[in-house]
Length: 340
Image 1 (cartoon, rainbow, N blue to C red):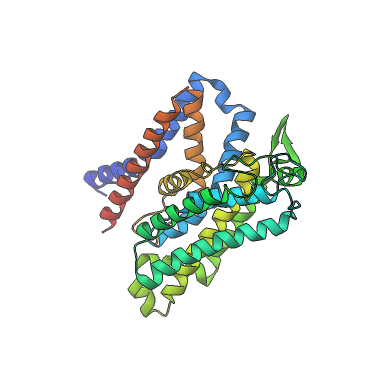
Image 2 (cartoon, rainbow, N blue to C red):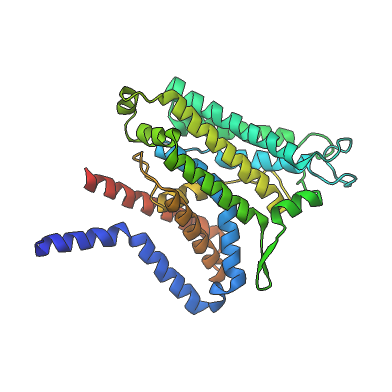
């Protein structure tokens, strides 16, 4: 290998992994500024926040692999969270949304909200596959529809648009309770639920015909169609599965935050998209790995927790988030152009 080839490969390696180098440097800087960043409570907090955001990121990752996206994800989470909270408020709670409705069984509510998420995903996928509409437009429209539906839902019963709280202990303990501790720091139950969901998604992506078809359609729809792949069914299936994962996220989020309003789920899709891009899920289609999504979610949480340790203004964090997405997309496109 010539000296020029070695230099070129070295430069490509540096550029391709520049985000990771930056993150390592940032972590070192944060630890030097505040060593508590690597304390057990801080690390468990990062783990918990990552687990809460992982299902929605896995759902959006599938849409990105199809060269699309899903802008409605955050609003699905918000609607599902508020529906879950309203149906699982304590009986006798003074501000109960539906005072005459008993607290429903936990699994019944979970089934309801997963069905809700799946239906939204089905509608998105159907419009994309059948009407050949761009996912950006379809999910933007769905986002607005869902937000309007959420605002109207919160006006029902005795709620009058207020935040939903007073959740039944069986619900909160199922999600935020703990059976495992590291020292004195408890690991919430939903961390293990998220791990289980991730394992299922790994199997779906890597060991099933559906997963192989998803990557084939994302790489080249026409080639996939000629090869016998049902492109329409695959697209609808990916968006439907994504909607179910948003439903899981909303069900967890309602109990995790404890007080749900129209703001619940706001911009969650942006965090998920940023995590996917950082983790190597490419907008050019057909490229992405479960471990990359996990890494992207964790790294993004490290960034935001670190910014809090550095006392960075919360409003400025949105600017930083946007820059991360922009830089990650630019690096991703550069990789694609080099391969071509």
